[in-house]
Amino acid sequence: MATKYKYIILANQIREQISTGYYYPGTKLPTENELCLRYDLSRQTIRQALSLLEAEGLIEKRQGSGSFVTNDRAHSTNPNGNKTIAVITTYIGEYIFPDILRAIEEILTENHYLTMIFATKNRVDNERRILSNLLQQPLAGIIIEGTKSALPNPNIDLYREFEFRQIPIVFVHSSYPELTGAIRVVADDKRGGRIATEHLIANGHRRIACIFKSDDIQGHLRYAGYSAAMRSYELPIVDDNVLWYTTESRNLISIFGSNLIRNCTAVVCYNDEIALQLVSLLKDRNIKVPEDISIMSFDNSTYSELSSPKISSCSQHKRQIGILSAKKLINLINGKKEETAILPWKVIEKESVKRLIDD
Image (cartoon, rainbow, N blue to C red; front, side):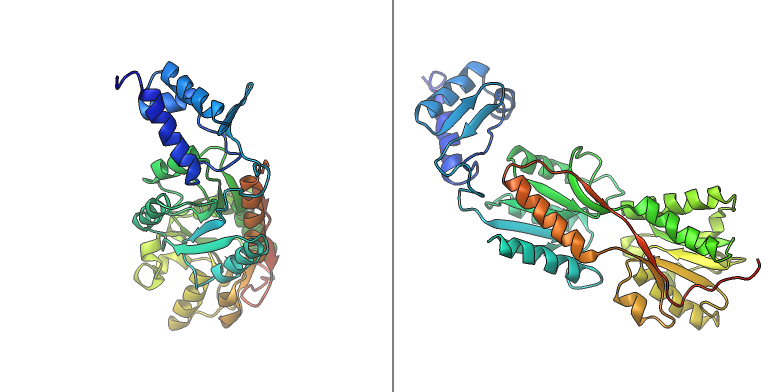
């Protein structure tokens, strides 16, 4: 008897998932093969359960497309009334994040969504805790910044679960290579690394050091751009003049070595926060910026303005990152197709780069 009525038990489970918003109106259900694997049932049992739900008018089968939850409101925005979106970034109140988060909230509020904001502090254990908790509550979608995106991520299984539940996700700044097809709003970081380096080269610098972050993919891409620029001009890349740091070691005081700038006239920094630290450390060693060494950085943030001298920095429209990510997520929620956005960098020249008359 238990075997005979397995399809009824399955139909009851799916019916409850529809009523609680796990599958909202207009949502495509998992394929028959996916349901077979998920519930360890035969295809015949799956088809019986789906046929029962179709007879009740809860789902409809579309030739060649699969099964979809039906409702008179199926074409309205997030019709089950679920209007909550989770926004997860590495940090919240510091650096470039307030501008991005404000822009996200503005767009989501205009479209009548509620926003929950979380910070991972660029820790995968925090990311796992946040994602696990979010799986326990109804969500319309997620905007998230990848955590330590240059490293293998142990939380891909949770992302797969959101994908299985057809909860759309938009990544900002970075994502994970395992999630093929992920929609992203990112900077063209390789191109950014190249234009920052080429700006120094155009000002007469030939011996250029660099400082990049090793556990986020942005650091790898900016280094790739730096390397490409140096090779294009047949300039040497010396290991002693390349410094890598991690989230946990971003305090340069403990890792800065005198070899980094030995025989160099300029440095490309991963971001303005690191550049500001570097300016301070150089002052402590009676090394003047830009008289003795020039500095280029990224983000054109408040840090670049607070520094004395002000730091020349590659810039992008931070609000645009937030606006695009929110709009793309809303489109995905409404069943529209979206594509990744790759935003350009622009050099903002300030006081930290000196033009060399001759090398």
